[in-house]
Amino acid sequence: MGNPRNGREEDLAEQQIRERVRTELSARRFVHTQGVVDTAVELAQRFGGDIEKARMAAWIHDLAREWSADKLQQFAERIEIPSGFALIPALLHGPIAASLAPEWFDVHDEDVLNAVRFHTTGRVGMSKLEMIICLADAIEPGRNYPEVDRIRQIAQTDLQFALAESFDSTIRYLIETQQSIFPLTVMARNEFWDQVHQVQNREEIE
Image (cartoon, rainbow, N blue to C red):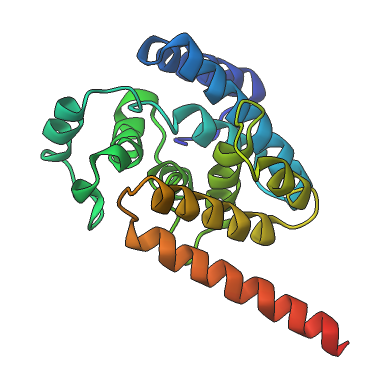
């Protein structure tokens, strides 16, 4: 965020963000966003993340989710978009929300912006905050898909393992529905499984 604020000012800033986000989203998408906020806070508490940053990123992450494809494309032409995002228009809402956050909400923290920017795709070298927002988006209470309960259970104890399983679930769905798979997602998936296997191998040796 911008300059440090006291608790009351932080509450006011979050309230303003929440209400602006509400105007951009349908009631259903706003309920999802609230679920991501609550889940992100739980994950941040569980795994030692920054709770305030988790709340801010979670509120902002789907800001542009319901923009039309034309509006997303037109806006994307005016800002810097990470390589490859423009090829899959459905992914543009993350980078666009990140680009709006400084102007609309005075949010300048690069970790928060990256958590918003890559919440759908993941990427190699994700920070803890990025992992928390990505996973919270996948397992918030409104999500309902075959693997979600198992991923939620794993998320009780292992953030990286849960994300590895979450990326596998996403990739399976994209394959089954014959949709494009973003290379960053595959790379992130591979990195997390490498990390999980390294931990498992160390545990077997010990």
